[in-house]
Length: 337
Image (tube, helix red, strand yellow):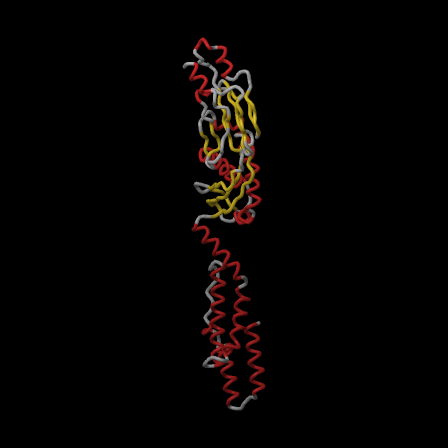
């Protein structure tokens, strides 16, 4: 290389990075033959950091600002000393820029279900997903541990490892905890904070700072979710005996408006009682004997027969309307409690 080539190379006197690509975390400035002009200006913008590498070794880390590169070990000094070697310098230098912006909205999730032991459901397989945010805090450490001498370092290359760290921490916390799934799902914010604390140091080893981590959802397999929905429905039903009594009381004023009047009420009540007993036995595990059909009860204890008999006596004038009403009220009171 002649003197003309040497002079033309020295016109690169400002080194800066526009940082206009959201996918890039790191960028090596394209310097011809890695040789930097003596006295050149290094411009580091806000939300950036620059790493100066001289002779293959990390020499310095620059925070935001403008810097004049006058270090005596810069390659241009050797040009002046080695003019007899046609300005071929053995010293090489690099400048790597890194984005220190907060990387928000980064997603994580369990690629495979996590198998845990739950005191309510036994062995269950959980899935979880959420979001996290991070930034480069120590550009020098990030250069040494992650980026290296590559021309470009992208988010996708880094985040594949970061997601694995999050999922691994979640698996350990869930697997070693004695917290039931239902309590875990109800306290996702607290669990997310525990995961964040667990992986913060691992992020720090790469020169990164974990700013936030959240769990958006913890879910069970579909078949187990259906079983959980059934249990919730049973809990919402509450005491079936009280529910049956309430339904019976609600039906009394409506029965008088239907065809057959009060005469059909007894049959409806008896049917409702039998159904309630059957439902109670079924939910109790089916260990009890089936409810005795209402038709097998003695005729004297049949509410329908007693009401019909009272109505017949009223029509024949054997009892008064007041007597009929009083007796009917007594029968219904015994039925509904």
